[in-house]
Length: 420
Figure: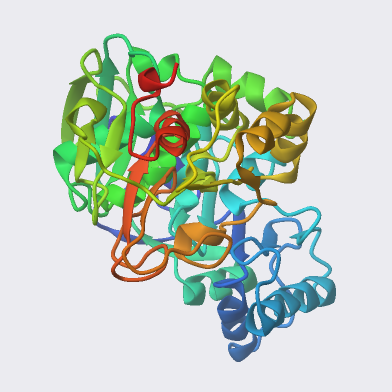
């Protein structure tokens, strides 16, 4: 039977000669990780089942990124659990303040996740690494705790949906806009337990930063993962990150998909997702006079260097509106350093923005930008559920960095064309 890239990766990690979609299988894991919220729970499970040593100290990492820097005693205690376990297990990779970045940006940057791999993480946005041609799946802390001990995970073989993007992208339209538009067409449950495979000429010409953004938000359509076949762009990216060997797998030409959806990007505008679901996406031309109190540029979705460059292009020689707080969060220390060396931080600070150290922070209403009752934010994060960024009576509008930067200047949700 002709196979998709997802089926090929799963089969290469289990002892099954043939796979049936929907079948429950046990697979070997190449890399596993958790953060300061999910990690302590996974460690507790690891201890409860009587494990003494992790299956491979080079294939597990713990990353204290959600409440970095620690915002209170409880978050400090969470981080302490990660650090003590990492030291006791002699883990080769552990990232805390000073080295830490948002996990889904940090792992590819460090060359720890590679094409053809099966990756699990105790965080829903683990599919970000699917942009490398890996199968990256979010799991619960219980599953992660068992995997840390055994190196294996139980999975149900998912169906795949293929999304083929053609046409020519308009200015300011990037991966965030493509995935928001796609979710608006299929809904937040449109890909439940399926893998969203992104393909077509538009995807082939997308940068890695934009690919990471698309795979990151596959979960917002209910998907098990998002994936893009590795190609020359992927290999160039990896050449700068690692010398490790990897295997590139691709879908067979006649692979069977549950559904194939073709999307012409020619008429897609920069998108804005209205509260309180990512599927409530509209083109910027449909958005009228929505005042904001805060703009956030960052997160595992849009905190990469290309996102910061876009924001800087718009903010240069402009000032943040007096009624708006603009918070910019580079996703990793390396991205922070690149932004510093390129002069982007100077542009941000002179515009009136505040630049945060790498953290998930406001994305989950953790800290560094929590909303009060009645406040509105435009954010490059990935979710706009009720209370996601603070008070349950606040509102979050999702967009890419261009709209987030332009809106910070005008004080209302705006197209970058209004300020450039």
